[in-house]
Every structure is written in C-alpha cells, then in structure tokens.
Length: 578
Image (tube, rainbow, N blue to C red; front, side):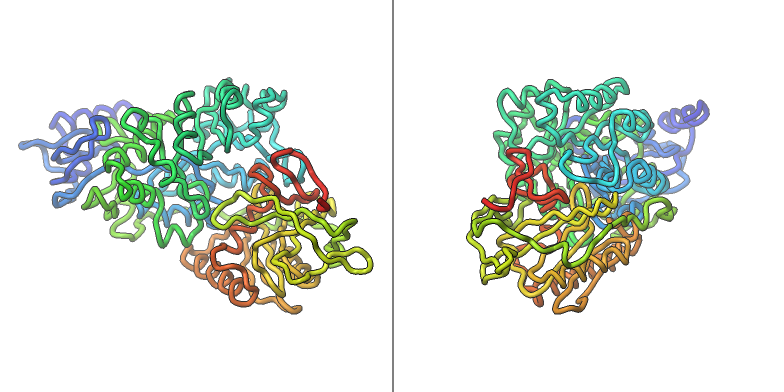
C-alpha cells in the first residue's frame, strides 16, 4: 500500500471520498465482540474503510445485501492441497464459493516427491488465484528415516524458503519422537523457524504428560491430531492452538467439540487437513466444519470466530479475519447463522463467487519440473513374491474411517517354496514400490480387513513419501496396476484377471491433476465403484484413501514402506513373521 492509497481509504472512511464498493443493508458479524450489528460496509482499495452514513458520497458500486449476514472470509488453518487431487487453481475454484478465502497449506506431499521444485511449483501455481494461499515449509521430508522419499529437506533447505513473505512457518512436526528426544537435526529445523520469527505447526497424536511438555517447550504452537476433549484441553493448557479437523477420512469436529468452552475457544480453530474433491463438492469446506459444530450446539458466532479471527491471530495474519476498518475486504454473505450457506464471496473487495459460481479468472501454471516423476528400477511381478519363514504373521489391520491401523496376528498358508498364498481369509498382499531414487526397493506385507478379492488396486498417492502402493491377491494383477502407474507418471489403477479395469492419470508429481474438480470426483467415484463391485472392497472403506494411508509411518500401529513393515509404536522396521 502506498501513501495515496492510505489517504484514499481514510477519506472514504470519513465520508470525504466515494468508496469502491458499498455493501448495503447487511448485518455485520463482529467477531471481536461476538455480536451482530446493522451497517453499510465501505470498501476502498481492497480494504474495509468503515461504515457508511447518510450524506456520504455514493460508492462506485453498490451491492444490496437485503438484510443478510456479512462475515469475514473463512480460513482453513491446515490443509494439504495435494490431497484434493487438484491443482491449486482448481482447488481455489472449488473452495472459494464455499466462503474460504485464505488457507495455510503444508505442501509436504509434493515436496516428498519433488523437494523444493515442488514447493516452488505450489508457490507459482497459487500466486494468482482468488484463494489466498500461504505455505508452511515442510519439516519432515521424509517423515521418517526408514523409507525413501523423492527428496530430503534438511535445515539448510528449509532456510532457503522459510523467510519468504508467503511462508508462515515450519510445517507440521510429525517427528514428535525426535522433538522430545531433542534430536540434533530436528533442533536445527526448529532453530531456522525461530531465526525467521515463524510459527511451528504440530502433529502429536496421543502425546501427553511430560512428553507433551517437551513438545510444547520446543516452541510448537498448533496441533490438528487431537482425538478427545481431554487432549484438546491438555494442549490449550500448554499454549497450543487446537485445530478441529474435518477431512474426508478424519472426522474430529464432533469428537472434540465438548472440549470447546467459552474460556478456551479463542485457542480453537478449524481445518480440513486432507479433503478430496468429491467431499469439497458435496459437503463443502470450512463452511462444513461450521455447520457440523453449530448443529451440535456450538454458538454460531463462536464457530465463525474460530474460522476467522482465531485463525488469523494464530498465524500472525494481522490484515484479515474480521469485518473492521483497515482489514482486508475478504467477506462472505449468507442468510442463516444456524445453517451457513454462502451466497456471495469477496476477496480483497473483488466479487469472487456468487451463488456457487466462481467469478475469478485464475492463471493456470504448467507443472514444469514436477511431472513424470517415476524412477522405478528392476520391477516385475517376481518382485512381489512374499516368502515367509513361518505361518504365523503380523497383519496391518484396516480400521474403517480412520488412518490409524491395528496390528493383527494370523496363521496363513504357504506353498512348497514358502511363498504366501491366499487361503480364504480377508487378508491380501500389500506392497510399496520405490519410485523416486531407482533403488529397486519393494516392501512387502499383509493387509487384513480390506475385503479385496481377485485383483489389485494401486496408487502413487501414498502418504507421505508417495511411493507406489498396491494391494492384491494376484502378483500378475498387482504388477499390471503398478506398470500402468509408471506409464502414466502416477495416479490410480485397478486390474483383474490380467486386464486393466480402470485408471486415472495424475500428471502433477503423481499426486494431482489440473482437470476440473467435478470430472476428477466422477472418475474417482467410478474407480471406487469398480473397487467395490468387481474387487469386493468393503463398502465402509474408501478404497484409495484407506490404501494411501497404509504407507504413513507416523500414525500407529503398523504401516508399510519401501523398506518393509514398520511398527510405528516401536519406531522400527519389523519382519512380517510374528
């Protein structure tokens, strides 16, 4: 902002100059006092100037709100754009009509594939979207030293980006074990955030007591992995903001809501974390979090405060989060406080969405430097043979609706050469094929409770290192699905009886596509129908979402990486044999 723009804003507020925009006849949601008052809102140079009054000059544009509520634009406090399967521009097109005007995005998914090339792509691809995208510098690439990712971001790499204006801090510190042990490499990353004066996001499922003290003492100030109201209160007690998450797989809003009180709600925010395109289209974004919370009894003005000013203050975004003079004119209009359905959206005073239609014209960025990321060596069906020394095995047990897995035990059948063979139990083979460094690694294990029969399903979206993950009961079908992903440069594939039943290309790092969100949602739904109808995957399990989290070695109990079966609680690789 220059001096002339500031003078113009002051003159508009004082009634000496016409506003660029006047939103007339609205009920303004005051998130500071948690109340509502009638006013005309004046906008100048993308910022709110003040409230109109009789005798003020007529604005250049007038929008009659007709008595509707005007609130600040919504903020998603923690999200991975990559989990939508969409490019940043397409993500913006879907979420802005739902009232989200700002997000804090952690691009650690694409950085695990492409390193700083991926980070820079996300910066470029979100620079000219209506959605205001701020990034966090990923802290855990890879998330553990027990797997191969496409890059390693150490403290020196983080230092190259954390000082940028659109970078708000250090991304979720998933290695809470390393933090609590004061690991030297982790401390170096935390020190880079401290030197830059930036916040550190947290990720500490199940952490409590003195270890939670140690985690907070490291300077970590948010957490989106709370599971109970007691965990919420424990973190707020330590000065940690708690993010109530409602993603496609993780549904925490209603679980945590009993922990939100009038005394601690200023330390409570909303986030989505991982939300697929179909969920965005069918249910919404942060507006969905608000509707769920209000429907369960939370005061709607408190819910709006959690989605706006609380988030802005947490992340040091001093120019937004409220309808007040001097703030960015990020605003949403809606009719019912108790059932938030966004009608109109303004971003920096520009009309960005109207009744579900996206009005902005975003600049699309080609995925230069982040496409075709497939470096698979020495792969064949023979690499999928699982030779066991015992009939007694560990299994990764699927927990429907959760990214947490169980640690199962089973007695299985082996052939004369000791290789696992399907025997009628709900147990199939699962494998991770390393795709970044040409190591030739194939990690093997057994998956229980998935329901798959007679075929294979594979995806290159496999949190967080995003190697290829495949499950099936036929080595040939598993290999066919993997080979299709290699050919496409990543995506999703299903095979049965030696033929492909369907696939979906993800040309951006094997994680995302720039296709329209509605088309992507339909294609994923089609593949999920095939997985259920042809392969028998249980109806209460999202076939691809469940599979992609089987490779996440920071969420208990057993997971699979390219180096083998991983015990998250013991934090070490373990044999398949029990």
